[in-house]
Length: 308
Ligand SMILES: O=C(O)CCC(=O)C(=O)O
Ligand SMILES: [Fe+2]
Image (cartoon, rainbow, N blue to C red; front, side, top):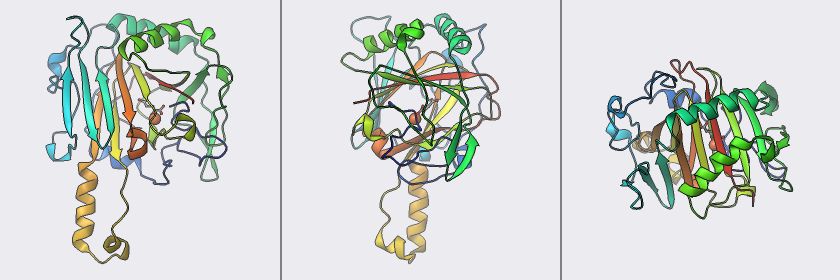
C-alpha cells in the first residue's frame, strides 16, 4: 500500500489507525481477532536463531490455529526456486477469488535482519501521531514513519499527513528494497510505511490498504523484524442475504457466524520474513496485528507500496 494502513487521500474515508475503522465501513473489535488466536511468546531474540523445529507447522511455514475448521485457505502451494537450492522457501497461499499471499519466512538472513532492526530502531525518525478517528483525537497505537519518492500524492490518513522522507535519507532501505525486487521480479514500489510496535499493547486494527491511490489490485510487500507478531486476515463480509437483513432467520444467523470463523487466517510473521499481499486481497480481505500479551519485544514492520 502506498498509504499506510491508514492512509487516505482527501477523497477517501478515514481509515483505521487505532484499531476500529475499516476502510470499507466495517468495524470490528480487536478482541474479535484475539478470541481466535492463541498467544505466542515473542521469539525476536537476538542471540539464537529460532530453529524451525519449534514450529509444528513448519511444513507450511505458517502458523495456523489448532482448530482446523477455522482455516479457509483454498490451497497452499510451496514452491522452491528452481534456480538455487539455497533460495529460501517461498509459499504461495491462494485465498481464492483472485486474492493471494506469498510468504518467505527466511527472506533475509537472521543476523543481517538484526542489523537492519538496530539501524531502523535507532535512525528512523519515529513519531506516534495524534490522529482523528470518528471525530475523536487519539494516539496512534504504534510508532510510524513514511518514506516516498518525490512527486507522489501526499499521504493523509485519519487527519494526519506524515512527512514523506526521502529514500536517500536511509540507505539500508534501498538494500531491503533491492532484496524485494530480486524476490519479486517485475514488481514496483515507490513508497514505504514503517511501523514500530514497542510492545504487547501496540497494534494495528482491522483495515484494508485499499485506498484509491494504490489501484484495484495493489501489491504490498511487508518485511518484519524483531518480535514475532500474529498477522490476522479476515474476509470482508458479503452482502447480507435479504432474509438476514430482515432478521428472519435464526439459522441464517448461525450460518453467518460460522462463515465468519471460517474466513479468518493467522500468520506468525517471523524476524526477517517477507509477506506479500496481491490481487484482490485489499478489496476482499481485511487484516490486523492485534495486541498480544506475550509479545513484549519491539517489532518493526515495513510495508512497501506503489502509489499509482
Ligand atoms: O505490521 C504489519 O505487519 C502490518 C502493517 C499494516 O498492515 C500496514 O502498515 O498497513
Ligand atoms: Fe495494512
